[in-house]
Structure formats: C-alpha cells, structure tokens
Length: 180
Image 1 (tube, one colour):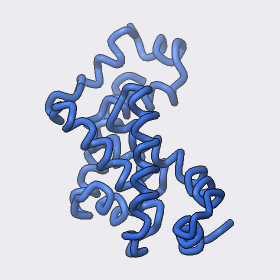
Image 2: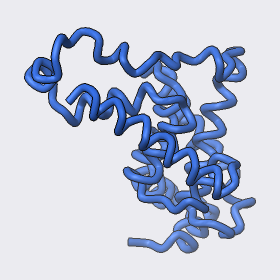
Image 3: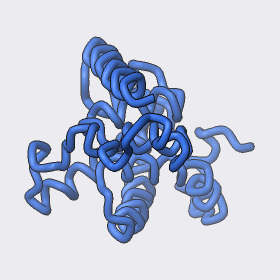
Image 4: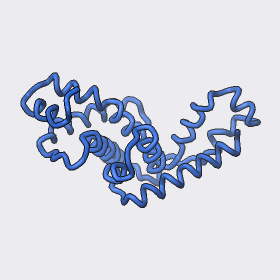
C-alpha cells in the first residue's frame, strides 16, 4: 500500500494508476458522505464523480494538515451540501420525519422484529435523523473518525460534534427502546 504523500505525488506526476488507487481507497467514504445528504441514487453517482474530479484538480492545494481521507470527506460533504443549495433546498425543507413514521406500519415490537432485520431498522432510523446527526453518527461509528476530524469535515467545533453525537444516540436509543 502506498502512503498518502507518495500517492499524491504520483498523481500529480500524471500517474493515472495512482489516481485509480486513490479512488478505490476512498470511493466508499465519498459515497457514504454523499448518501448522508442526497437521497437520489442517480444524483449520488454523479456527485461522487464530481467529488473525485474536485479532488484531482485540488491535489496541489492539499498540504497534509489533515489526513487525506478527512480532506476528501470534507470535499464530498461540502459538495453534496452545495448541490442541495443549488437546488434551493433548505435544511429545514429536508425530510425530518418523526422517527415513529418509520415504525407506524408495525402493530407491535414483535411484528417489527419478525418483518425486518433489526440492523436494517436501525439503519433506517439513523437515516431519519436530522442530517447533521446522521452524518456525525456515521462518521464516528462507521468511518471511525475522531471528533476533531468530524468537526473539520462539517465545519463544527469539537464540542458541538460531541453534543450532536450524544443527542443522536439518545434519540436512537429512545426509539429503539420504545419499539423493541
């Protein structure tokens, strides 16, 4: 495995194989970041391609003040947010359905467990959290990023990241506890 500095140097030198390596290493992260903001699958694919173009075009300005993955995640997150702004969608207009709407088609907790896999239901509930909460939960638990890295990506103070993570967990715990 090539370290990030050498990989960037190789890409800047015109090595397209190195660019493929960078894309392969970070495609899951980019898709993950874009999915947290944009729900349309076609738009997600297009945005991911755009993100890697931005990364390629901006590699010269990357100064290794953070990890390469943090920098790429920041570009992906902000690009997806900008996409929403261009579509004139405000955060307040995004679906913030009450989590109970995800559960209303189940009569009892037992029927919920019988009909769906618990992990899928939890993922669905996470998807219904407000965008910043679900993004932070996913970055922290799935991408295993630190509070500082998440704060850098989302342009939030570290204390706010901790607070949002606490609130998101509390919301999830309450709904899972209520219905299971």
